Image 1 (cartoon, helix red, strand yellow):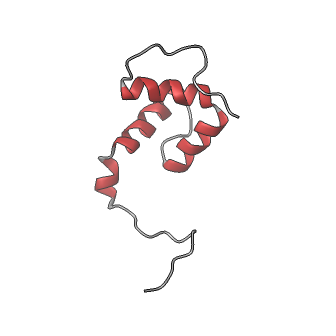
Image 2 (tube, helix red, strand yellow):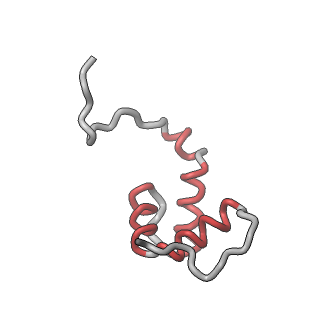
Length: 77
């Protein structure tokens, strides 16, 4: 068995499986609703870093979290 480098891609899901995933659905939906280039993993990651408040608000809505949202969705630190 050989060791893989941290940057090696070990597995890529088939396109059909990817399109049926919750992550893909969230990324596609938020790209349309928020006008973000977040319709793939890299775009979604970039949006979560560049606009964490908007990202976590959208994630809260998507997951249907029950509770009081509060004033700050995310506080780096």
